[in-house]
Image (cartoon, rainbow, N blue to C red; front, side):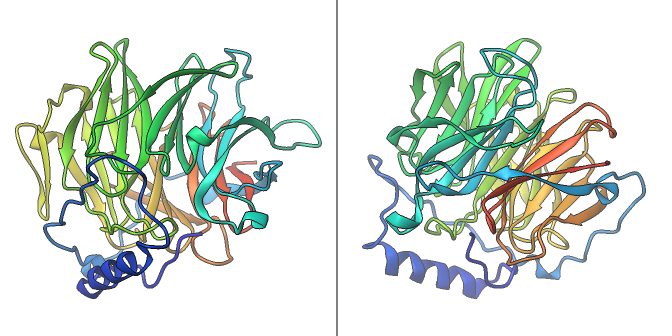
Length: 379
């Protein structure tokens, strides 16, 4: 569960977060990585002054209803579901519609420590007696917090504590680790993209404020944008660039800045060269500055953690601050919201859709309050 105090990003919070990090530094170290480096934030954005978004007609989220699927806990007791992705096709021994969920915490018997989970569950959400099935358990994915999947059902894993991004090849063989530069500290978001037959992988970091692209042609990462806002929090308190999702029709990469309460879009991300974008308190600069947009900020956006793209090309934003899902258009239009959990704030940590129309769409999401998988649908 995300520790959360107010939903407002104020100057005092910067001092408080710095104090918390200092206090816990001896108790919970950052991921082991050479030359760990924290970039100073240029300014702390106060989004409390931003008015709530004005709703326009044409949304779908408010017409959906909630359904329980199953527990998301591993047999070893790992819990606190974070990353989620859904197989869109049958391939590699994986059935279409299978949901993958990774657990961020280890078991209650091991003190339920944030960032020490090592398991991924495969859940086939149809039929009766639906249960999580361990798909992978490995120390190399310690702190798994984000997942993505490609058309061959290769699952890509962002592992915070082990500081690695892995490709898991079906049906259980390891691919090569995609290890970043020494600047990278704690991968915190991941998205596989395919545009005009070319594959890429995008990753954000929990502490460095960067966005990286893995180029398969050169087998290397480049940092295409830096200086995104983050709070340098310890696990359970991290608000950073996260929740990457991709609109393959319009070639748009989406994600959120949890600390600044913003929804970001980047058009044609595969075109951006190393260092081609720079985040500033006022938007974006750089050679490709016009490609990036702050679509929405503040208002109903409250400590966001995840995004996903629906069949109608609308993008959902998950709040950890109040457990609402918000629906936006690619131009930033606001279409409504849905309260996904009425319990304690900090329940939502991953969302992924399955379906190609309003009537066939299921919006799967993790719920940390009861360690379960749910979905929203029209029926």
